[in-house]
Amino acid sequence: MKRILISVLALFLITACGTEKKEEMKTEAPAAIEQTSTNLEITNGWIRPSAKGTNTAFFFDAVNGTDMDDTLLTVESDIAEVVQVHETYQADKGMMGMREVKGVAIPKDSTVNFKPRGLHIMLIKLKHDVKTGEEYKLKLNFAKKGSLEITAPVKDMLTKQTMGEHKH
Amino acid sequence: MKKILIPIAIFFTFISCQEKFPVLDSWGSANYNLVNQDGEKVIFPHALKGKVSLVTYIFTNCPDICPLTTNNMRLIQERMKKEGINHVDLYSISFDPEVDTPPVLKKFAEMRDLNLSNWQFLTGDKKEIDDLIHQIGVFAVRGDSTVFEDGKTIYYYIHTDRISLVDKEGKIRKNYPGSTTNIDEVINDLKDFNE
Ligand SMILES: [Cu+2]
Image (cartoon, rainbow over all chains, first blue to last red; front, side, top):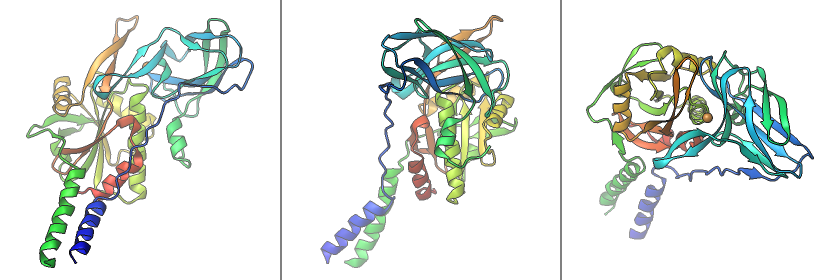
């Protein structure tokens, strides 16, 4: 009898607040090797929407399929007053910050992901609203490759990924 | 024997809930005079009392972390609606009030198509905000800045990345890691937590 009641007690303890879910750690993989070209290319570019006068970020993958190491030096854009290469980093006490970086190495045969919580291009003090659905040109300047012009859409990527049917 | 054990079982059930949502922090008896995105006065945390709240801390010039945290708040709000959770309100407090005036916050929400029916963006005097966040161990310090040709400077804050679960008494019962919050975990907690 006692035994049954003890197990009942234990059961209550376990079920009282539902099951504890371990937090999923999303691991960052800065340089995944996936050779898709024999050239240096920018793929999966996107810009986060933001209002005139504020800042936003441009994300993409830099795919270096060549056999030469390269470096992304600067980025140019007409939509912002200032454009900088930035990285987000973890500071003391779990705080998050970001800072400018001078050049990002894009090693041969590798892909460098510029993505949320990591490297990004800061578009500072937007000259006008940058809205979902629009597209803008950006120019990326590399040490060896020279300049690459690309067009990137404006989207809130995470929302789209997680909420498949989200409408705008 | 049975009669004794049933109250004990109930007691343990209660205790284990307390352990899952212990009081982590509180604003004590302090209240802060804030305004929302429409310029309406909000006495914080007094205005939160009587409902469970999720509170986050952001600045709108933040291009990376805060949009992710804001997006998580939106995903939580959408899931709440889907699952019929309606005892919870959402709040985003700006720790850069000199930039984040009510119109700036309103525009921030509009640009992201946010549903403000149970979600308010709050700002106030710098001192008031600093006191409010420091009281509960949230930090926002100026790091890098950009100086423009007109002499204006904008600052990038190094800041705590957090969403807090606040009870009906205005006490913090759990903290989630803002931009990397697990939405399922929050939803499960909200289903369990109504005190
Ligand atoms: Cu940045």
